Image (cartoon, rainbow, N blue to C red; front, side):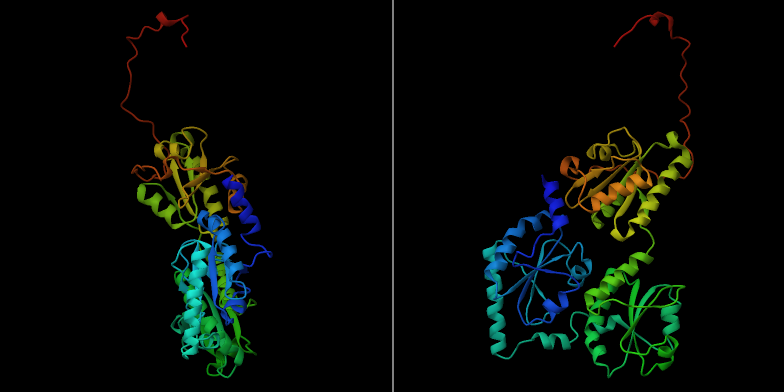
Length: 434
């Protein structure tokens, strides 16, 4: 089944050591690709992407055909979001060509058959060779020295005068490099730091910052934080003592650490009531998964009961905030078309579902609506386990516009009194009808 195929890909990956495709990640990308003189074709994929699964056989065939001529690699950009974000990957699969200037890859726009990809690679290779013969090559060495892939304008220059105001008083996360202009390792780090600063600024919506201090000029700062060697990188978080950055020095390593810091310190996602079609569409379009709870009617639970369900959801949103999923809820009966499309259909409240709007697939919570039950449900989804189905009609259903819950207990409707004085109940005694 499709689910078993998806599970296999998630657990085992698309490519193995037996294939000629090089599996790339933040740890080896700099060494294998950016410091290479070879032409690289790289596929950025996600294990849950059907088009990526379809491309796999052709990608392996391409790698075998071009072996020793052009390097062919693949990045699981769902697992390594830092690499995908660094190169502006917005959809899957994305194929990029890393040529003379490794910091500015080109998008491959050709067909997806192995023959078309091989033809495109050879055409690019021919152009690269002509450029080298005419002396126009960017070359891997030049591209590294150029500082390409990120603009230094996104690295904040920190000084004795502005450090406290910008870093300590901001309440936001900072990664700060203390460098010396004469330091060779600092020069090697400079383009990586610049590229990482640009990617982090975009991916965290300017909530995590990368700065740099010339420790030979601003010796007071270097002394304050015990800087003895260069480059030294320190992490500053609100209300905490700075900690030493212990990770790798490639842009991928730096971006990955910055994104971890962002998610660790970010507020949990907002839990929104489905008040209209825009709320549902925006949330489900913006995130890989949108988690939706259908809670019992307010007359069945009262405000206290409803708030206890919402509290469980908010705890789960906090627990899974690194996933960057959307979180929604609605009252039973308020969105009947949505319930019907998801097979909830008027029973078993509270209910929960998770929708992948790109694939129009959903999964239903089968366990208890509790922290344990929801955690098991979401954990299984995140590793490709659990049964899924297609959203009824293959599209998000019609959504009614409703008033937001006012936070109060419900009130039974008034003004519908019935006069039963004319009804003779005795006539029906003893009669049974199915």
